[in-house]
Length: 75
Image 1 (tube, rainbow, N blue to C red):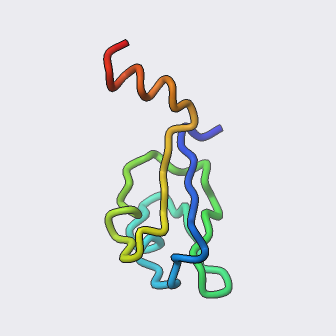
Image 2: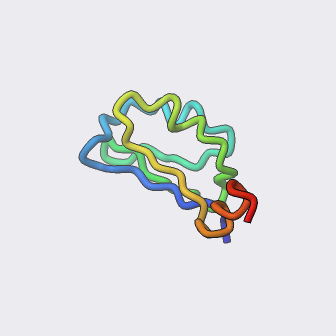
């Protein structure tokens, strides 16, 4: 299982394919003129897709959010 959860808000997505181009791991596919995380297990959490998305339609979150907070806050 991947360490990250990738989601695309279909309401915000304009199908520009910038996330598809930016993702070195080929997480996204363009289906019906919208981006879809077709291979989410390949996500390494680099967030290149988020940087390239002009409509802020993509979220990448650690699956274990509590472990991420612990690492960040040193708990």
